[in-house]
Image (spheres, rainbow, N blue to C red):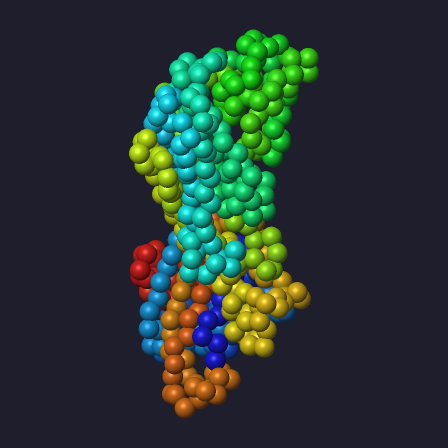
Length: 429
């Protein structure tokens, strides 16, 4: 007997089993397969059995029959999306005197149980370091010697993050996005109507139009909220070369009077760390949400650093990736000879694939006792009954997932369970 059966709807339902298409969900009476409405479902007795019917690329799929008397527990979960974690690490301006000569500073992220790297039960760490030169900073070109020292140290650290595939924009292995967001006095680089273009992973910023305040080597510039140092400026072609690859999204025609500024008199030197949404681009990928902490093993704990959580991690409920993961596992239960992770199936189209990957699903979960005769698990054939979990997932904005007065799947299922029309977070009624 399959211990988990998952039925995924795509937002529409047929009125009869015969007219069902892939992604449809229905609740039917087990004795004659008649399609139930909210009123006919509510009229069933506690011993009348029902079945959930879905359709996938292989055809119709039926749940094991169950009645209200068989139900051990029910649960309703409204779909919510993932919120990526965001931390800021603000450094105290590092003194530029001889006290910082030949001093090492390090900053990093510790990624919790990064399964992709194969380091099970371990935390992958990305640590970058900067060591000051053997002579004191002069402060030339900066507001102070401290500005010169801190700009150089943070630039070296940023180069380390940009070079690591786990923290580099554009890398297929990126888990955490790392940018700088310094606060200071802003002066627009572009004149009236000037625009600029940037490419993710490239170091060039190309300006079109009038230059109002030409950048120079060593200047600190802010590009749409992220900060870089200028390592070169081609005044003829109006091209700025950044100290690291651009970590934002590729863009062109951006206003150079508001989104491209030189910064001076820096009042806050901040690194921003943000979890990166992990896509499922192929059948080998697993569902993952990145969690991490900021670490600073050397130097910064003495010179001063403040780490704050600006956005808490929310794992989400009923996300597309979660539902697809459950659907894969359910198919493995139905076909026990399929190892879906090491040898993924290629001829089975999951219903979740019919739906946009940013969709969230309402989840209706029923735990019910099932007679032993309804399965092929002979290891449990001596038991009279054993529990089974049946999950129905339907998009939050669709008819299937709606609970209300109409005969949508969620409404019919809820009416079958109780007279209440709106399920609570704990159960349907």
